[in-house]
Image (cartoon, rainbow, N blue to C red; front, top):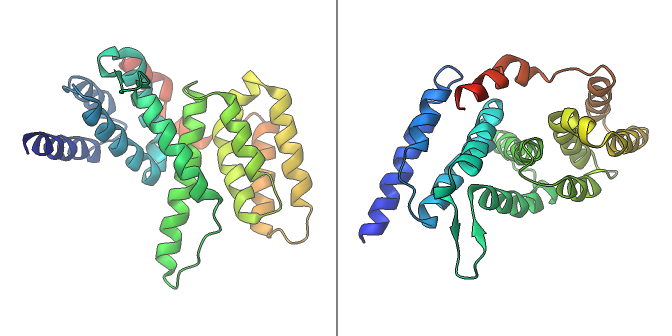
Length: 237
């Protein structure tokens, strides 16, 4: 049908555009994207899916996609729809739902495949999901309550889950420090006490030490200093 064709073309176009994303052409591509005609919630869902999938595999660019989601959500009220139950459908609600569904898969024990490469890909996607949740929190697109729900599940005696907790905290500690230092202290204290367990691998212990050090020394996370997020954000004003 005609609408299926339109959706396929739209998906291909968005994918093609975002495949070219670099720090240098970010604002040009973002301006181009914001001029698209997203005139149905079906197209908005496709756009959100494509962005979400890119974020899961292109971790370095997550802060750029964060700016993009923020802009689409806050500056483009044309791209906000209602579904039949009068619920609001926006890029924020769609991506938050995708995260919520995928977070369950993060909690599942990883099936170790024979194929080492496959294991690495699955792990990378799971880390991506944590970073997207963190990015949404940093941009106030989800509430701290969501972070607390995640942390309750992740701060347990399980090397994999603790590693995901470290990834999430590394991405959000700066904002969490500004918004709720007491809770951040609670998380790092819990992590430290968990890392004393003899069953926890040295690699995870180091990851935990890194998070604690970042926060103690008020380090800027590497990615943000390289990407110069403030400047890129200003370019989209």
